[in-house]
Length: 305
Length: 269
Image (cartoon, rainbow over all chains, first blue to last red; front, side, top):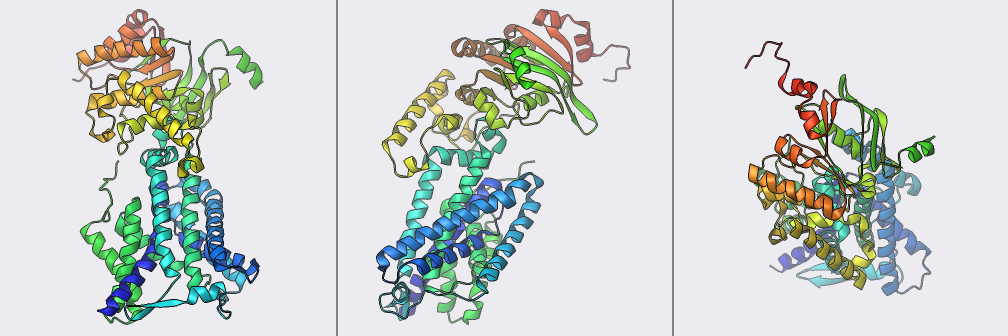
């Protein structure tokens, strides 16, 4: 039973990161109905950017400054890569149909992965933990909860996700820009005729999604290895999380992320070999799609003809 | 050259010159020219498929014309994107009402203020006073428009939950809230009973007088067109076949032919 607490906590922490990535999927899908398969790569770029900042920081920088700085820089890197991708790859083909956009997204994903391995020669990077008090060492510290060790840094994930989700929810539901976003997602033509600049709304939506993916990358980078393919699996799982929660729904993305994180760890709790861990997310996806195809919190919309 | 054109057209609020648009082999609109003066109410009528809605789509920038030019308040607006045309002051409603169904009624109106709002995301996320003062101001203004149309009681309901008549009114309120000076109404009386149509006629006249705007409307309900419009343009197969006061148009043989046929062809009914 002790183990249960450990796996639950661990699941919540990783679920919070899935939730952050899933929010980006859900926002972009809500606005332009594009499943942005390059989103996992925004996360990877964020992790690399954070590590880059870590390398330039003087070695004695206290972690209390360094960690927020790395998180913010990763967020900015996420914004830059997301907005560039939208402007260069998606905007020119916006009127060419959803299949073209989807294939472009997959192409961008491969491009960014290979660009990252070209630049870094595919060497996995990790925050160095050899010196006591260095960022890496602090990130590797763990506490024992329910019979297993959980890295202290992982406890940061939940409040960060919570804070970003609340800000995002506030922007979407309460502000003028959020109103414009909701209008564009429902009827882009009518929104344009009300004076809303659709291009600008789409750009800002990618900005928000990129910000959150970049920050998620920084968080995972703290205690895990950073490598060019790191965005693939979390990206896929976050996509599943967004679909499970109901794609287009902000609370749904968070709920889906937490569910996927927890289920994944519960599988380990049940002594299933850890190689099967990744299967859990897909099983959840299939079950949800069978029972409630619009997702747990999704709105039941019929396709209009 | 463009500059010269602009000067020539500055006497009228809105001007269309030789506008044409084809879809595949079909000429939807051909050599369409007209003008609207400030404060005028002009009707656009014609049989189904005559190209009336296409004219609206072309004016508002939803479609780009193949040929011809539009001027609005001294600006050359042909080929500009819809949001720019909306900012310049042209708003429209749709034949098949296009509200933002999952937004509340009041939010549907607030959308129209989007372009005028001067706070940014930083103001909003930090909850600075400017954000609240601007939001309060647009809420008050939006209520003003709802009251004008008598639908303020439904302000916080979802737009999708409104009955048909109120949906029509909300769409007009939203178009008006963009602070447009030319309002395009696509079949505003469709689906209304004669009493409601009479009310609507009064309402449109009131809007024109109170806001000093011009109105260009498509309508099949002849009682509304004849009561309200000062000039009527008749379109058939994309071409203007008649143009004049309601009375002149009513008695024009070409118009009667377009609507009823010549009687020479064999009529299967």
